[in-house]
Structure formats: C-alpha cells, structure tokens
Length: 282
View 1 (cartoon, rainbow, N blue to C red):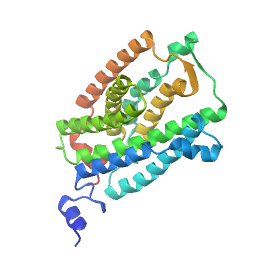
View 2 (view 1 turned 45 degrees about the vertical axis):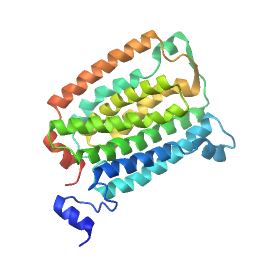
View 3 (view 1 turned 135 degrees about the horizontal axis):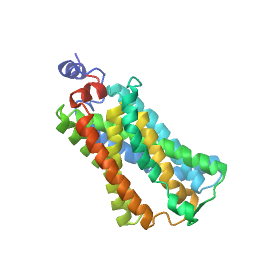
C-alpha cells in the first residue's frame, strides 16, 4: 500500500491527493499561492500583442485572460485530485438567496456619482469592452478557485470543525488573498496598495461566506467578476476621477452594512458541523 493510500485510509479522505496537499495543508497553501503569483506575473500584454498585432489595454486584457483561463484549467484538475467539492450544483435556492445581498457590494463598486456628473467618461470600442469583460471573468474564475476553491478547504483541513474553526479558516484564507495584492507595490502607490490589501481582505471574507452558503466556486467567481467589472471599467477604459467624497462615504456605509450581514450569517445561518463534509470529500 502506498503512502498516499495509507494516509487516505487513515483519514477517510476520498481522492488520490497525488501531491499530498490535503495531507500537508500548509505546504499546499504555499504551493498554490506561488502558482497563483506566477500566473499573475506572466507578461499578459506580450501574449496579447501576438494575437492583436500591438500592445495596449486590449492586448493586456486578452493576454491576462488567456493565462488565467489556463491556470484555472490546471487548478481544476488539481482540485479534483485533492477531493475538494467546488462545483456542486446540489445546493438549495436558500444559500444563493442569502448570498444575493452581497451583489450590492459589487454594484456599489461602480462610480455612479462620477458617471452621473460627467466627471468620468468611458469611451471604448466593442472589442475593448469584450476583452475587458473577458479578463474580469478570467480573474474571477482563477482567483476564486485559488482562494475559495482550494486554499479555503486546505485551511479548513487544519481547523476544528466548529464555528471558531470555520471563522479562523475564513480569516486566514482572506488574509492570504489580501496579501497577494502586495505584488502591486511594484507598479502602484504604496498607500493605495495597502488600502487595496485591506479591502481585498474584506472582499475575500465576503466571497468565503458565499462559498459557505452556495458550495459553488462559480457563485464566488460571478460575484468577483462583477465587482471587478464595476470597479475597474472607468480606470481601464475611461478617464476622470473615480473616487470623490460621496463615493467614499457610500462605500464605507455599504461595507459596514455588508460586514454586519456577514456577522449575522456567520452566527445564524452557517452550520459549522456541516462545512467540512460539504467542501471536502471525507
């Protein structure tokens, strides 16, 4: 009997776990995080320019989307081998309905005030909009598979199967999600990056709750893609000042409301003892 088979027999785990990531979750988290960083740092614009005959925003969106779709495909194979449940469609409507209010956070990410006053204008071709949307979808799929589909269950494998353990898994997986955005220090203002890290932590916690409610990484990816599409369209395809006093105040209010709703769900709706069997094949 191989070491993998012996380990699986002892833990009751179903899945070959060929690389031993589920049996050594900390090692698994490091490996998957480094893989994600590698995909993020690949030269997307260079790849896109091969297809479009030149660089720029469209080439960058296309190249980044291709790299992330490839990463998503490879990690899907890994997740299946590990035995995590990430594509379940058997969850009842209740979980999706409870997760629906979080869509307001994504919608609020759009700069409605600037668009209404004319401070922001977005003028892009149909191809530009398509490639931007394609990139948003690829980011949502890839990052949610990494952090909610794989890293979250890996952390759960090391925590107790109670409410405290689930809360700790949400915090740790969200912290890793926030920390990976530090890579933007190479190209952005440090203060802006630190704010992005903090807000990404909150978004990660929200997406983890969606995973708990829906047991489906596609639900998390849809929310993530919508959040990016609403928030980055003006920066990527338009001109003008995205943030003003009104949008900042509204974002703070929406964030506080979302945090309160998250706490309610964690205390009243999440049945901690059911989490591991529904996210990890035991």
